[in-house]
Length: 511
Ligand SMILES: [Zn+2]
Image 1 (tube, rainbow, N blue to C red):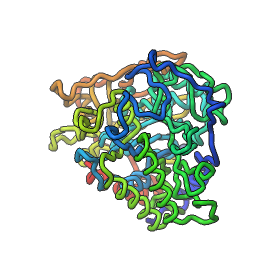
Image 2 (image 1 turned 90 degrees about the vertical axis):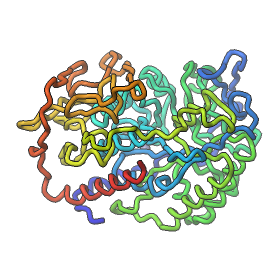
Image 3 (image 1 turned 180 degrees about the horizontal axis):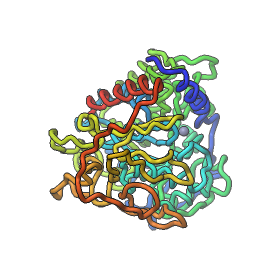
Image 4 (image 1 turned 120 degrees about the horizontal axis):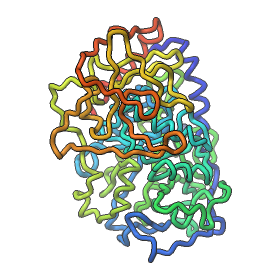
């Protein structure tokens, strides 16, 4: 697809920076460094789980589903959604539902309306800082929640997970996550094979007795620290090539050369991915993860030319994995829901988190609610020069920043402010133009939580129209939005708009 040079110029440096995002070269823990001990008689599900290679709840491995966690990191764009869809869009889990995944979203270059769509389609939206910084300060973490709530309509309580850019985090990062009301972090590698007696491939665990992964890389962690009761670590499970422990591949394994070679060989990658999967599957069924930077697999992004062989290889791996009994492709949120209340495979029908979740909205309703076919003509275009984006919820006067993640709304002449998703209505049922909730039954009733992410730790509740915390200007009368005040900047938009449309068309298939 053609893109104007100006846009390419802005995006390429980001792409290059991300190529180094999250690589490891060897073990990141040892049992001596971990110095971990946990009292299983005091640490019980659902709110406490000891770091263990054994399945949760005392289940035998044969009764345990094999979870393949699929995640994506960084900006959400049409290119990245397309890239993910080429692996997941055509698949089903054993219960016939579409697989879901976790998108660790950073906000520079993110098109907010695609975040809304992706969330309403059932995927998990998680925090990856506003501007993609490692060992992030509080504002980078909290501001991401605030901006995603305001401009993508993601309920505050739905953003439960975090991954540190470059996987660079500290004990303080984990404490900031707890203070902001997160449920889990997923930044710590498990980088010793499950077949090694010293493996650190633990099932997700709480930090009641400290961290047990990443002990060689992290200061003041492990040996019982930090104590963060009820806060989960979902380890990132590495694949290992023929060299075993000295050949780990964590994120985007398909970008690495296998077995110490100097060039990428997709067949070799496929072989070791299968071998690592089987080691998990035939052992204690610890999850395995496909941790992607989907931009590297985009077939429409300027400057990126993934080989068809690589794309086919990843699909071959998933095809092969899905043939094995009891294999589920899931988001971190789904994995965690099962770990907290583990049931044998024969009872998976009872697990709400694994069910299909297409919202039941009257097809004749034309509202801006994250369902692409409802949104024709209703999206706001926010034409900021470095990266324009669309949203259902009214453009901010300036781009969200760490200092001001929820700027006042820019209301077009003759138009009316849009109302952000409030605390008593879920995204798919909220009409931001009429400021009205379409849900009238208990089946779709929703209550958001507040979070202590305001200035000086004040609780924020979402809703309103943007601007200072607590500002609320929900209109009481309905005035149709005419959209005519939004003009396309010359040049930049023609091509990008095509990309957005492409993603929307792709999403229709998913729903
Ligand atoms: Zn990243």
